[in-house]
Length: 144
Image (tube, rainbow, N blue to C red; front, top):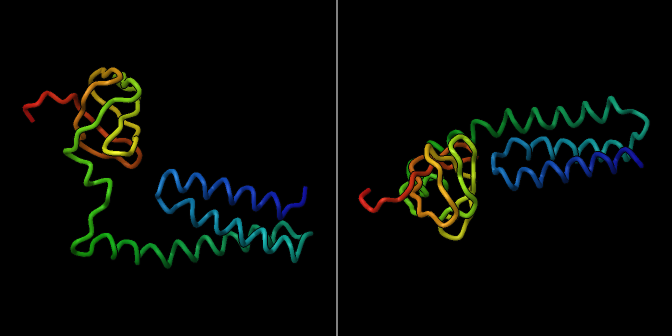
């Protein structure tokens, strides 16, 4: 298999994972892999140039977009969509064991979630905190 095709496959995998995590970290690496694939088309015998071009693109994107995203997040009126989940009710779709994540449905979206208590499928929960990839939930008791 040609090296440019391998770079594109790696880029595709990274971009799909990025769509699932929404962190933007893997997006830059995926774009770097696309650039490496383009270099591989024109300079197929130089793996070093391919890696170097991809790394330079990743570094440039990271350095120049970090201040922009930091400024955007700290601007007045910005709210992260995940932050709006705090205080909302959800339903346990996949059981949550103490220390082992499960899945909850909040609104029309499903999320990985953890809890300090064991929750079974069908339990009503309330979102109390959010992590980078997990929601912290507690069983809904109606008095909160």
